[in-house]
Image (tube, rainbow, N blue to C red):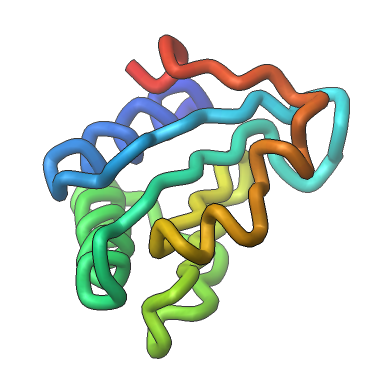
Amino acid sequence: MQTETLRQEITRALEDAKGQDIKTLDVRGITDFTDYMIIVSGTSSRHVQTLAEKVRDHLRELGVRAVGTEGHSTGDWVLIDFGDVVVHVMRTQVRDFYNLEKLWGTGRTSEAAAH
């Protein structure tokens, strides 16, 4: 699957599962391990886990499997690695604490790119 299509399908799944404050960071040229990071907030640990499950299930239906997943059991921060796109699903408090948008701030934040 093309990177842009992958990014769009991940965003669609997050929107369908009521993910909050979805941001796409274009990190091409900053790092060589991925092209995009998608960061989304969940309202609770269970919501974070559900968002991650919805993304994995939706992509699996399209024939795409994650390279790896971390953090699902705690539900504070779930990282799903799809290679060209890495998804960070976080509780709002965890997202505020780690502030990945600032950490990767030299990447272009693109809310419009999420659609």
